[in-house]
Image (cartoon, rainbow, N blue to C red; front, side):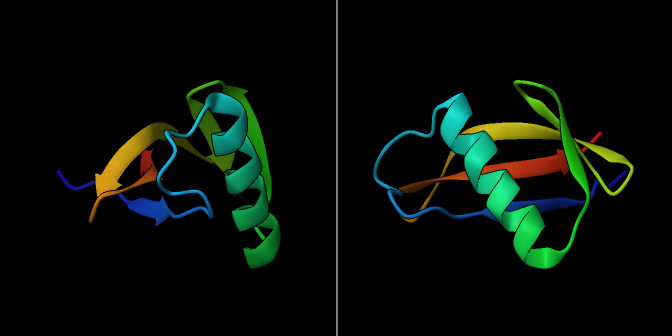
Length: 71
């Protein structure tokens, strides 16, 4: 019913995140938090054995961000 998701803010939140920006920010997040990761496709990442869908450009309080939702 409910899927795990998390939000990754990034420095230039007023700019829509491209695929490369999203991958860089997810990589930083994973390294900072000690997670193992690999990119399955442009819009999917595997983190600690679980596959997450990458939603770029989710808007919160007027800023863009990156949301990862477990598949």
